[in-house]
Image 1 (cartoon, each protein chain N blue to C red):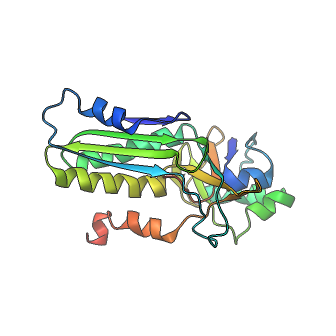
Image 2: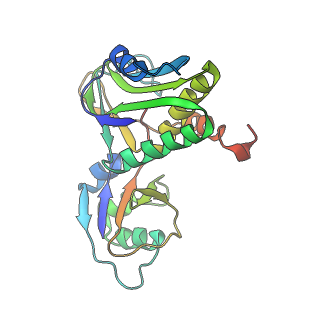
Length: 83
Length: 158
């Protein structure tokens, strides 16, 4: 699965894009976030419960219990501030 | 039509190009968003010397197209143009242009406001403000923007 980070998530985690392999028991958006938090360090800090983040799966906004699969594009970013 | 681009745009030329040849248009409404030279979250002493707009290529275009489609289904519009820039900009520069054209003014006014309210909460752009020392800080999302977008939701009763 391709993971994309934007804005302060990109600068905090220190990467814009990475590829991860999903274990069989990772099936929802929340599972992916748990998997990333387990990496600790900047990941745990950026994805902490106190942080307000948005998730998009295949370029559509997603909820925590939405399903995910290996070939998906998974993006993590702050609430948007364009316009 | 939507465009996501780094280059600046000419508001007058864009509006002329949109209306040219379509005599069913009776009114055009436009909104231009500019880079301000102060931070609204801090005191006036903090000036903004530049702003960088980051975006999510692909999703940005997809969301803007969806928003245009919603407006066209909701109002009788002859044409719609949304241009949003990304990259580094200085105070006074254009960030965004929304143009709506209709036979009558009400649809043009309403659709233009709707498009701005929706794109501010749905299009994946993020602003990084630079102060006079060159230090950058990410702009926080505003609850007022969510409320503005919410008022167009039919289930909210407006």
